Each structure stands twice: as C-alpha cells, then as structure tokens.
Image (cartoon, rainbow, N blue to C red; front, side, top):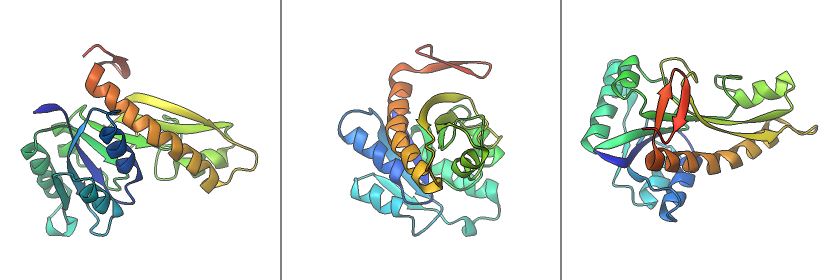
Length: 205
C-alpha cells in the first residue's frame, strides 16, 4: 500500500476532484489518484477523471447489489486492489455503511460546506445563512458513523455578507474548498497526524 495513493468517491460535478487533480498535476499536492468511483452513471466527475488519466474510473451501480453493505464491499474491493491508503469523498451523496467506515477507520476524508460541528447535513450553507451567522466556511474531516461527525482536520472561514443569498455564499465557500482540500491532503500524506480523543495533532503520526 502506498501512503500517497488515494481513491476518490463522487456522485456529481466533480469540482473538488478537479481541484485535487489539478493540484496534483502541478506538484502542489503529492497524492496519487488511482481510483475514482461513482454511484451515478452520468456524473460529470467520471469524465473529469478519465480526461486526467486516472487509471481506474468506475461507475458501480447500487442497484446491482442487495444492500448497502454489499455495495460498499464491492467498492472496498476495488480500493484495496488498487492499494489505496486514503478514501476521499468529493461530493459523494451516499451514506457509508458501518462496514465501510470501520474497515477504513480514520482513512476516509470528507469536506463539508460549513464550520462543523455547526450545520451538519445536506444543506449546511442554507442552514448557516438562515441562522444568521456572520461567518461561514468549510471543514475537512475524518468520517465516522455519525453524519459529518468525524474529527476535524482543517477549516477555512468566509464572511457572510449582508446581501448574500445561498448561491453567492456557496460560491465563496466552494472557492475555499478548492484550496483547502488539496492543502489538507498534502499535509496528511507529508506530515501525518495523530488523534487525541477528537483532537487532530499534525506531524505526530
């Protein structure tokens, strides 16, 4: 298993995947994207991965499997065959099974468009705006069995402007995501980290 090797799981446009691939191609993020898996056959992220020359790019159809565990076992088999150390979620819109989370414990990374632990769930941007916060942002975190509940690796903050709507705020958060995700992955493979309860300490792996 190669410490820099990652699998990326996607469902949609693939903008965070594109940011990671671009950073890697420029030498700013020393990861080796070996696998991209999507649960959606028409996900634009699949084309992005193929165009970038990713070795294994797969649509794995959830309907071909009897349950969530069976589907996640199929994904895990692909990831293990490619000897990936890390699993990176980039707009992956399925809840992972307990099997998958525990099989790759502390090796699954996600990014969420809010400053966790606030505003978990599907609409972190809209929920933050509706609450009236003055700052919003994004969080890179480890994945556990609680939705958006894993230990925090990194965060970036953006101001909430008086004339913001959901789309304008989301665009500024996404701009930070495209920087923060590759930066965090780079730090992860170069420095490592250790966990003290929920606290991540960098460079102590």
